[in-house]
Amino acid sequence: MGHHAADVAIRIEALRVVRGGRRGVVVLPGLDLLVPAGQVVGLLGPSGSGKTTLMRAIVGVQTVESGTVEVLGLPAGHPDLRRRVGYVTQAPSVYGDLTITENLRYFAAVAHAGPGDVDRAIEDVDLARMAGRRVDRLSGGERSRVSLAVALLASPDLLVLDEPTVGLDPVLRRDLWDLFGRLAERGTSLLVSSHVMDEATRCDRLVLLRDGEVIADATLPDLLEETGAPDVEHAFLELVDHQRRRPEEDR
Image (cartoon, rainbow, N blue to C red):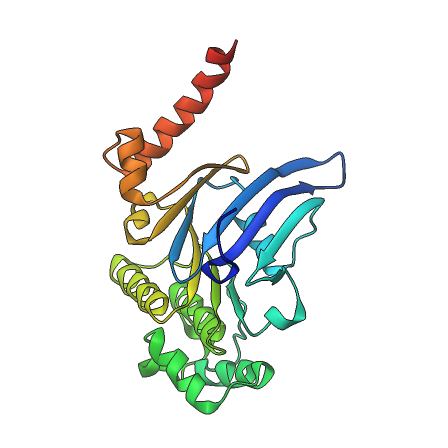
């Protein structure tokens, strides 16, 4: 493929996922994808396009019918990836009856991270001023940031973030994207899903997903040039229209 392993964070070939057994719904019909290392890659597409299923396959918690998923040079779900991959789901996976600091100390013990890592992670997500507050007293957006702090504890090489900015106000969204940029500068690879098309401007590279298929994989300038569209939303629509026209042209 012409890509050295060190340049690639995620390599996916012919990934097929069927929900509900062999005769169920085909969610990913045979997807190929390369995610470069050290970049913020946006995974964009409407709800139901297969973004979460793809992310679950990457972190090794999704049953896969066929195909290969390689993460940081190892098969997805490999035990050696536990500390190297951080995964944040849409539903915050932290304990409501513990404070922010208590949550992070607990997860730090599990991840063999130190007290300095706890302070750094809380600082990174801008929650230091409320570190002593119980998680069940936080807003949805604050809870999501606690989950992100947990994922940052072990300084992972790859962060897989499923719609991390949902429910956040514009200022917090901007701050979070600033953080993603800083992490990429430090050498972290990030795959960030979103259905908010304007977040595309913050990504180094974009993967547009529709009905479980990659309809574009490019930088934003290249995508806009290729489609002649003024923004990502119009580029997406242009690509979908092009897909619809193609079967008619093939007749």
